[in-house]
Length: 213
Image: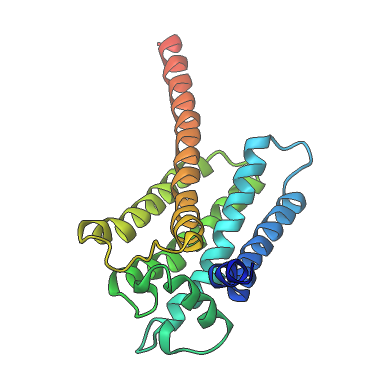
């Protein structure tokens, strides 16, 4: 029994719990934002989109923003102090590149924080106003995030994944799989939904022009 308890404590630490609690807290703030800024009768898809984009923006600015700070101008996570450094060292135990400021990862994260984060906020403003122009920007954002995910992991896979530790189930299934696959599945779903809205509108315009000619 003692061996089992020790094994579990090695897999799921206090840092793990605090980090995941922080992510959950961000999700709750995003949900609360949807209750404040969207009407009660907002379509379900719009509400889910708002929650995701708010969550996305908050993660980019807080979690990933702290990583960019800790990984530029000679700094790196492995030698930094503070709660965010501790959190990122936990993630770096699964993907070592995040600990020693891998230039490809840092470059992508700078673009994410300075580009994707503000774009999320802009789309949220359009969504709150029910402006259909949001669909174009959702496609832009989703494309960028899918590309970012690909460029984060494809170079690693092509070189045999020397920086990934998959021996710990928490690292493999929560940090490496779940925490990254949601930035593939959800942007892809949003892209498809927005494509349908854009295509439907353009076909309607085309049909209307054909009738008037």
